Image: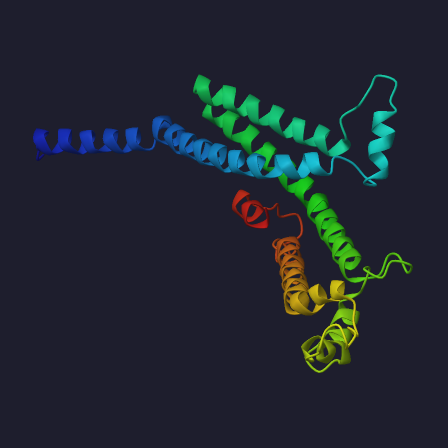
Length: 241
């Protein structure tokens, strides 16, 4: 019976052990550590962007809820959105502690929980910002005080101070002062001078608002192709945020 070559036998054994070492936990732990670190940096960016938005509008319905918060017996209480944001920070901090301990699996799980909470908070907050922006835009272009001559709609400004309007012609007409009286209020000149800027600002404002609505609708539809019972992945959640 032919004996096997010892060199070949030991070489194969070494290769087998090397493959087992390559598939063992250190490689897996390093991969999870990378994921935890990447998610950690991702979440810091989210929280940095979220904080001013949350503190600007801490509760609903805004601004009436602010008075209710101030009237609490214990003093000013944190709004519901601030409480949710504080929970996000708390879960993130737990994940950070696990990360520093080298417990990367628990750290990554906490980071994923934190990401899910960010998504949930943003889903409501983004709709609120859209509604609030639309309200502010309407306030800017509609008359709020009928008795105030300076309170004009954008349409009024376009009609009264356009290039072919009577008032704009009056502004351009030469006159001999003081024999010829002025046919307009000099305060109205600013409407003619700023007409195009006002219209442009309104156009850009509504354009950006429309883009924001489209972006939110796309985010909501990120998981539309998932099968029943299939959970959204961290990457899909990131795309949604």
